Amino acid sequence: MEEPTINAHNKEEYPPMHTAEHILNATMVRMFGCPRSRNAHIERKKSKCDYELSACPTEEQVDAIEAKVNEVIARGLDITVEYMPREEAARIVDLSKLPDDASETLRIVRVGDYDACACAGAHVGNTLEIGSFRILSHDYENGRWRVRWKVV
Image (cartoon, rainbow, N blue to C red; front, side, top):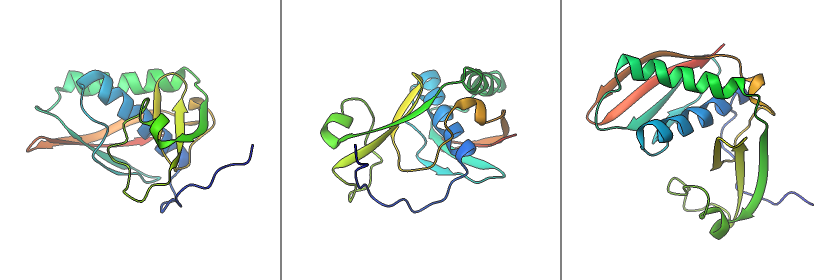
């Protein structure tokens, strides 16, 4: 099957960090019931994500986030891609952050059975290629929890 044309991606992510972001997002949704990060800056050396939370996570919760992300990485999950019409994608993933000019055909990236989202970015083929996830620091202000992290 020929790969459909989708919107051009405007960033060059480091695939291990970008794939770890998917796992972090799914972990936050599962643990806190919050939306995926509302703002993310993914770089090779360190990255940050902002989440809308009603309170700052405790240090025990921060440790649990890091442990869960590493547990998922250690499962050796394959990252797969499929293309589907926007209407079909809306039944399985949150499209609220999709740009207005997004193509009618969307690229859905799955991290095994743990995460699925519409994404045009670069990813590793298997979570074992990520390395270890480490939370460097975090802060909380006006309902926004910012976490800074890296993979090593």
